[in-house]
Amino acid sequence: MDPQDPERRQRMVSTAGEALAAAQAGDDGAAISLLTTFVDTSPAGDVDGKELVLMLFRECSEMVAALGSGGATPVKMQVYDADGQEVSIDDADPPVRTAVRTLLAEVHGDQDAARAQIDIALSTAAPSEVAAVVMQALRWTIRLATECANRDLPVAGWIAESLD
Image 1 (cartoon, rainbow, N blue to C red):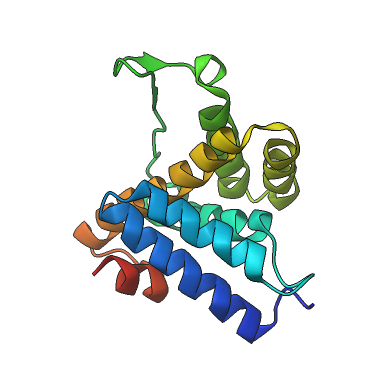
Image 2 (tube, rainbow, N blue to C red; image 1 turned 180 degrees about the horizontal axis):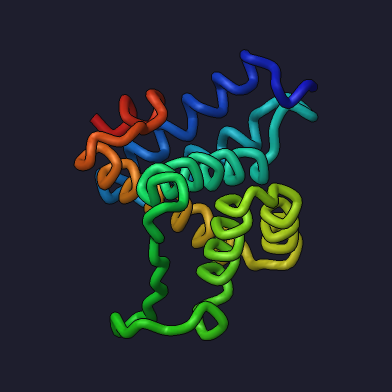
């Protein structure tokens, strides 16, 4: 199926929006379940988890660009360990490293590298690690959307509606 198919995109956006709302409400299990169920019940070739996750990272990238005033104001990415201490990307847990590298690739316009990061995660990671990458994308989407809204910067309509 054509990745630009409007019906397919609407189904992805609707499901991602429900997952965002669940994550915002603190129900990580429901958020992951929504995305997993969507992928498992979609017609063959209709969508895969990779496309949903990449869509979230693309939206995060757009919001990072808005927050960085198109590159004029740097946006700092920080990674923290379980104790709340800042660590380098290389010292972060594998799902966090994957999420950071995917977002950085998207921010720099390298969609092939972003796709490669998600491909690696989906093909080699344990289900709990894949869920952690997805939750990271959902959490960043929520935080970035909140920050953009607070600064009167653009947020995709479907994200804003999901978080109202």
